[in-house]
Length: 56
Image 1 (cartoon, rainbow, N blue to C red):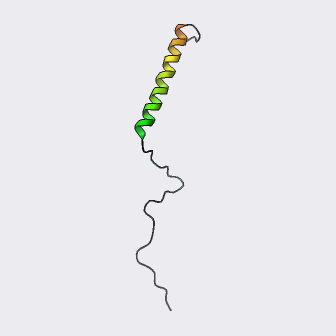
Image 2: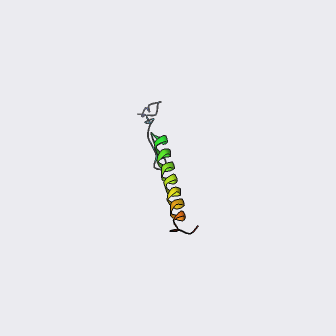
Image 3: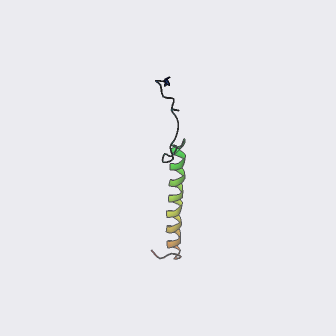
């Protein structure tokens, strides 16, 4: 007696492996947040340098 195998392998199409990261749905939000944090950091450095708190 032989075992018949299904010719179509049943693999789920949307399975993520361990090494894959899901893509963020809102990359524009991440860009705006990171840009805002960068601008605020630069402004804080400039203001603190102006008042002599940080020596640049």
